[in-house]
Image 1 (tube, rainbow, N blue to C red):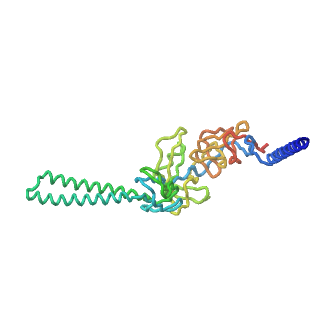
Image 2 (cartoon, rainbow, N blue to C red):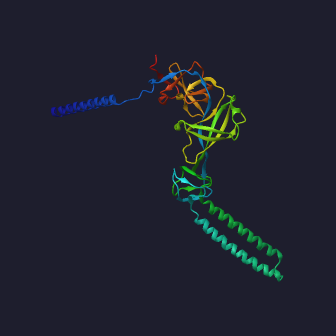
Image 3 (tube, rainbow, N blue to C red):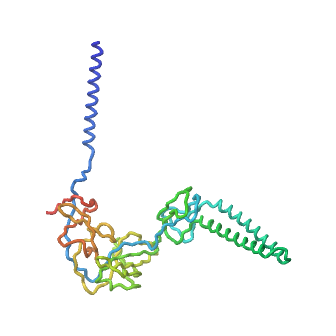
Length: 351
């Protein structure tokens, strides 16, 4: 009996030691794991908006968009049996992109052709009999209408067969492929996204004071951030006739892109020579986040960064005019905003 009690005590002690060791190891592992503190302040550099003079030229920011970008849908029902292009491939107008199974339609076409042939033979026979007054004119008319009906049926099936071949409506690049081999598609099913960047559209917001400097058909210089001082030629193709709430007008410039130097989503700026300088509240361009369609900066209040929309006017290489949305006394983040989200705590090493 004593032996059994001794064994039980030893077993309990061993289990206790094992549990203690496991808990100790767990604490050591947890101590080594880095846990990001989401409430920790992010180190940034800040500045205040300043009054800046835009001298001999004006520049209006925008983002390049493809001249055409459309989703190609299916006009047929059935299984995809062939896909000719992948994402990133260049295609020419009229090239076959994909093929939907048309076997049943081909059989229907053969049946329609047989029916049409029979209708035409009946029409010939009844026409000859009509000359001999052997049949009534009504019967002849029915056979002729039957021929026309069969011809229409054949054309409908031929159109359905043609729709099983999905072709490129214009030349471009396949930017999305939304189907796989063997997929079942129906009318309206999206298949490909086709993007044409042979020319690009650059839309800029122009303040009311400057909009009369733009004319339809006018040739303007277009700068692109990544190309530095290199200029591209663009033509003004549209000027909005209605201003937005900030009294800005949208001006669209079309830029030819035969060598594909430019891509959709790049920043660009329309440059105009100006006889008078413009002095206005401005922010450093490095503070800009988001897109030029919706320019934003981080405004700091009580050591918290708030993502703030503002309306941009003209710009040069270093500064962007503030039309509205930011005040002169605001503090904005000019460095480190890549690590920020709306309402993030911040700290600075500035004194």
